[in-house]
Image: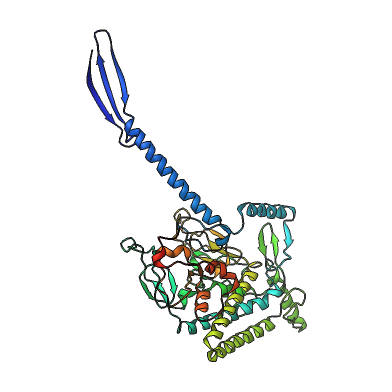
Length: 454
């Protein structure tokens, strides 16, 4: 009996370690085929798989442990991928349940008068003063930042959105801009400005937030765009002559899901009656509306007070100016959050577009992920304060005289909003809200001690 090699097959894609030999055995009585598997290479391949799987499992457990650590729960995470959607601020189950309840309410009562402001077109009385305070705080923040940047410089990357507060940029390799791989993700710094410290995304101004809440694609050039936080203040009761808005004195009606306003019809009837009787109807309904003249006067006074407060800061010291700027920052953020509890703000789930109002606009200008399937329309969802005001988190520098932040020690560094970091470096005390985020309780090793730290 003798053996003759007939065929050799190697599975290069699926089984790299297998060499399969078809051997034909010839004998006087019978002929048969047998497959001989060489298992020596398979054993080594199996060991490599076990080692790789064990390494990936340990790495995954480490990442999960760091993410769930309550000590660093408030440290900002790396920016999400552009293909991923923003997380919903309200769970999807709650949104579905809320939509079902609204649908059942419309079926039970097809024609009803909306009672709760601001959905009925009226202002929320307790938020009118808050809107003026937010506007004053915003002007104070911008004025303070313009003065502080003359003392504390700001650096920004030429190729990405990274910002650093200090005279020299850090050495942490996190650049994601063009050709970042050839630079080993090292940032290329240049001088920044106020717009790099804090950003206010713009949105379309709505003249009638209840009667016409959407902006069409053909109207995108006719309707002005203003900062979203300013539009939020206008809808909450702030009066600006350059951006007029409609103020109602009577609530609107909801008929089978559509908003119907009978105020114009009533005004026309009253004008016809008054033209015969000579009686002039008062401007304000004390039960349902808000005095428009008082609102305009309060808005003008608040704007004058804002300018006066800003001019008073010129003679203040650097420490007082930084403390005042930080206080105005917290006042603006807290006031905007309070207004957003009543007045809805929408944001795109994939890009940075924001729209203040009950609905998002219909302008086809989204260029983010999956925009082709939406024909350029935005994927609107409920916005958060970070969508309304760009906080722009930066690395915290403990000592300005120390060398630049090292990439190997980035796990020991904390972060803070750029406004807070700028005010702290200018002499303001560290706020309690950001002590944990700045990791002030973590001792950072020296550069030559990196290998000695576990």
